[in-house]
Image (cartoon, rainbow, N blue to C red; front, side):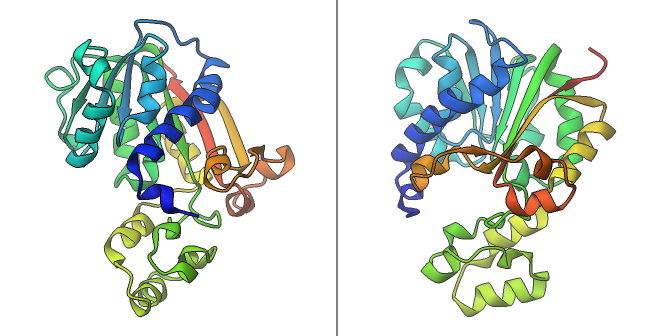
Length: 263
């Protein structure tokens, strides 16, 4: 069921198609994507999401800390790299220089399944204003922490643990003990535990750091699940999506588009 996580090229292809069908249309509902726009993806992985923007005529920059993933991206996007339509920075985003590494500001910044892995999320979101063009937007797509698999337990080697929902909500010592009891590598999963983010936390941070929410969409069934499990994507019930905290437990993915209030 989760084998595609081990096939990085398959995952790359899925990310491209998911972005084409869902991410780009979501952004364009409020912000037209035009050829020549500069797009930055933070935590780009193999840059499958970024490729969908490149195919629309945008110029892309991908920042990724994991060097092997960038090496894959350079192979799978060799023509785009050769043409100067995309370039990569293998560096922690906090250590990237806006002018030297990123070569200036961006019309669109993308964080797809990334913000829930970032420490000090408020710092990053506030800082992104420094490399966003006036009127530019930032896209976020992430699984709320309290959703059934918000702990990313699907990556567990133990099949039972990989399919068990909500146990990541246990107190940290109990959660760590359970993972250890089944022989799991706790480091990565506990890091996600420590960087987790809820819908309420995200909206509070965006307001506090001077952004406005331009567009949002909550999914009961994450669009990418059509490739993972063959499930048809389903938008969350409007009433449920307005109920604080409860919505986190039954919403598997959220999309947000934000912009600086002052531009």
